[in-house]
Amino acid sequence: MQRLPSTLKEALRNYIGEANVRRIASHFFPEMLTLEEQKRLKGLISSLHRLLDARNTILHSGHKENLTLDDCKESLDVARELILIEHEQPEV
Image (cartoon, rainbow, N blue to C red; front, side, top):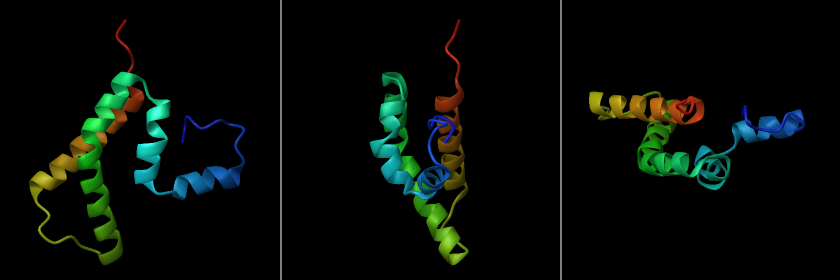
């Protein structure tokens, strides 16, 4: 959201904020990322999809059967890596 042009109307910003994350990640993220960041994102896609599936299950049913500590760690790792892709500064 922070990389969206500031000139976008609020309604469009809200629409984008509510859009399907999978489509945004696959169609629009690559265009906003460097080649190295695109490679990193590509390596995360399957884990990101599992995270989104778990999130949707929990949101709609209130629980997720067979959720393990390893699943939670994988989700945390994916979230951290996505944050690093966005906020990592190049070495000087």
